Image (cartoon, rainbow, N blue to C red):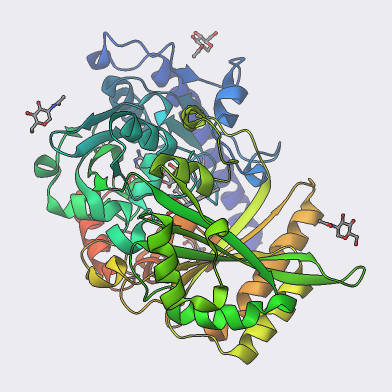
Length: 527
Ligand SMILES: Cc1cc2nc3c(=O)[nH]c(=O)nc-3n(C[C@H](O)[C@H](O)[C@H](O)COP(=O)(O)OP(=O)(O)OC[C@H]3O[C@@H](n4cnc5c(N)ncnc54)[C@H](O)[C@@H]3O)c2cc1C
Ligand SMILES: *[C@@H]1O[C@H](CO)[C@@H](O)[C@H](O)[C@H]1NC(C)=O
Ligand SMILES: *[C@@H]1O[C@H](CO)[C@@H](O)[C@H](O)[C@H]1NC(C)=O
Ligand SMILES: *[C@@H]1O[C@H](CO)[C@@H](O)[C@H](O)[C@H]1NC(C)=O
Ligand SMILES: *[C@@H]1O[C@H](CO)[C@@H](O)[C@H](O)[C@H]1NC(C)=O
């Protein structure tokens, strides 16, 4: 009897809570459409999309590259605010605070777990799509880049002004600056210049009260530190970053040489593991492992592709390769010289000769279902173990691996200089990728299981205690937060940030003690 009473009381309070939150959601949308007058004269009618607006779906899907979060069952936002002015942002934040609706900030939308545009709690999307200004200052050798711009737009605008300046950031050209830089940002020049965040010299941020801090001094060194690798979504809305451009030669050289196991891939990878992190820092040689048909019908084998870039001409590169990695037998005919901006297209997978204007395309056209994971390797993997890994890759079939060498500049930067802690002592980073095009929950479950099987299998060969992970390769399976507690946050926090986690928690507690800026993997407040 007593139990029954408690249950019915519970039921009443649950339904009260639900109707309360539905009322709040309605009031929130009304507030967005008619924001408090202090934000006038900027009307929001052109920038607030609710599900009944005909373009709601188009605007939402414009930056959803991963079909895993683009299903009818994917939780949708109450509204999308495609803010065009700071007063739009201020108005949206005021409404969100007043009616307790969570915000998801989206720049490029590439978050591997869709955290910038979906959630299991009521939320709205603040879309930075309209904040895309890029100003290159050749006198200073710097640029300001708004957070809604893409890496491709940034590369294009730099190259438009200079053929001897570039910037070290991601290989993919539709990544948003907001998410990419705030998670670290690595690319093919990291061995020479470090990460994107290692070349950031300023920024701006909006706090939950709508206060704008337009530079490094006004936001303070702590917050400036946090948004260079700690994930900006835990700290506020990043307006953009001021960056220091880096010198690039007029010509760089690229190559892509593939060898199957039958062609000696295992020996080459043994050598790659000692060469790639220790060679000339102008040289970046990525290793990708994919499956191809073997010689017998129905048989699959691993193809190891060595994809490289040298910041310089081909004769110089060949002498470095012949000194440090002669086993690959790289020939002049394997090499292509090109401008740095064309190498950007090469790495992004465009055929040689593609016009650079494709870098200005801001929406993603090729969409697949995807899952990614990451690891760090600190000791060379033995020949025997490589054999086992290859066997496993054939068994799980769909999983690809990208091995990205560290060393060079990456090993010189102290691990506490930015929240990104994976510096000295790492030979390479592993990305696991599984992608598919068939829809359906069963298919998805199957592929996620395969990805996990591969990840589990790799445990003995990669970092442990903690098993380190890269924030830009967001993975909710390494831990996620339901109640936003420190205990929950620590589980994924030390994997992403190691010793820097505690400082992130301190900064979070100081600047956002109400934990307004939260999501499934945000930095918790210390309680
Ligand atoms: C195909 C592909 C290739 C990739 N290649 C690379 C690579 O070469 N190197 C690399 O380092 N990474 C790479 N990544 C990972 C990429 O860097 C991250 O996914 C990054 O978070 C993408 O940023 P975004 O703005 O596009 O994502 P979003 O999904 O918009 O944002 C990611 C996170 O940042 C937050 N955020 C976004 N904008 C802001 C802002 N203005 N203020 C505060 N918080 C914000 C979001 O809320 C979310 O939590 C790749 C990803 C994909 C899908
Ligand atoms: C969405 O619909 C409302 C109501 O019809 C309209 O006032 C508003 O301007 C629309 N929003 C956009 C961005 O078009
Ligand atoms: C570039 O930087 C210099 C030096 O700080 C400054 O004087 C100049 O006004 C800047 N140019 C532009 C176009 O902003
Ligand atoms: C690989 O083999 C399968 C048959 O086993 C065939 O359908 C496919 O086209 C082959 N792929 C390539 C790239 O040759
Ligand atoms: C979250 O909090 C609720 C209520 O206190 C509790 O029942 C639940 O177990 C917590 N979940 C986690 C993952 O800690």
